[in-house]
Image (cartoon, rainbow, N blue to C red; front, side, top):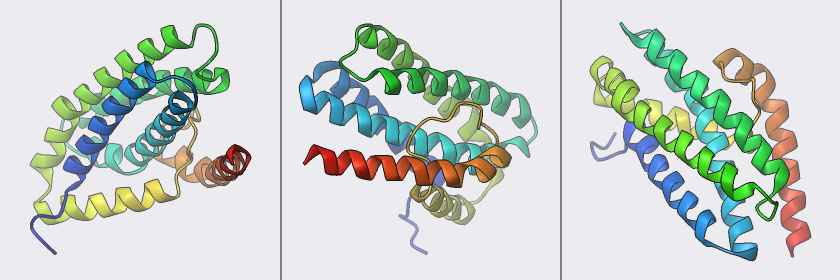
Length: 183
């Protein structure tokens, strides 16, 4: 295993950067570019949070002081999923979308900052580089089969494992249909 391979923390921080970038694109773009950027943001937020809920949060919970850190993050994720689901249902051209998008952006970026400041250090203290790299591989695998839409109420690893696969199939079928219809 290469020592320059990304660990789970670097992987998630890179995704946080991409999420920040996509919020900026959605806020500035118009028309199809805005719609496409929003769809990508929805997909990235959905798979990112699912992987964290299935794999990262359980590891952090095991650490001393980890339980309250994770509980606060799960609450933030639930609120963000509800808002993201509302926005996804509205679409980027709907009246009121921009106001809700700003609220979502502020919530999501605060959530990412809390993870980076409070949750990730607990992982870094608990595990060596090899384990953190293996966790990154596991997160990538989970994201490859995760739902691509928000599903509020599935913020636990158990619920994601039970409800995630059928939701992922439906989401990915919907994505494929949407892609064909755009042609």
